[in-house]
Length: 317
Image 1 (cartoon, rainbow, N blue to C red):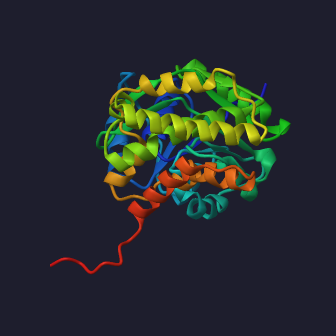
Image 2 (cartoon, rainbow, N blue to C red):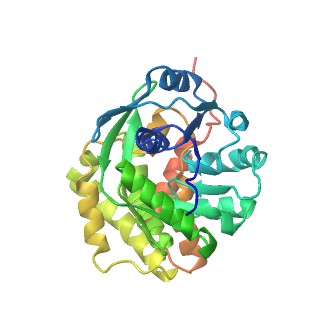
Image 3 (cartoon, rainbow, N blue to C red):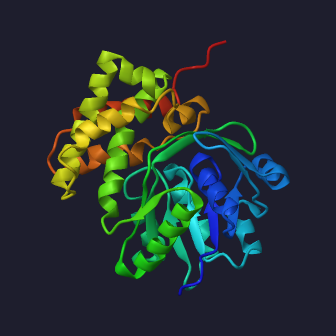
């Protein structure tokens, strides 16, 4: 029997915080790592509270303010990256300083190919991917609102060498209350999540409206559907086999999401870099390589990039 992994979760926002809270409440070894010191101090002092779709307060006494502080926890053998995909290029060199033989690395992020990015640094045998089907928002220090959970989550490995750990983690997460399935076809679920995110995330960021508003308005619902149709076409042309009824499922999934503000919407409000390159931008990139036109995704990507760019106009006085 393989010993239970001792986990550090890099990124204690909604995705990583919810995962960490469930695992810690179930008694697993968890270190929460983030650069938000007040958030971590509050978690250490009074626990991490989850409200909304789940109600709990989990005691998470092990915290690290920044990746470098993970060196204070030498027992850690599994690092789950739950940050925004946009920070991966600058995060990996810091994680590499802690890497040692036998350590495993897991992407638990939005976007296409984040696990491939980790594999370039740490080797495919040592990398796994988690696709979560929950979402939330950080509501101040040590408090995360869980907007919804549509189980199950999925976890898979890049090579057969990582499959035992993937199965073990699926069991740990499920036992902790986050129903999670092992899959040998994680790329399929990764594409499904990317298509769902591409359908609404950027549009909500551009309009500053929650998901339900966009799906209740005829014109924006139509745009969401066309964004997803393009994603499905590119996925299938890439050799990814999606269920025949996936499109209808995707539309209904988004219609049930409620008044949740997407992560990209929150990034724009906070003037943070978005994950557009890993979502709609990846669909455009893959489509171009395959000779497929993706005008809806190209347009939405260009608009987000235009929103992010620094204006050359003189400041108004």
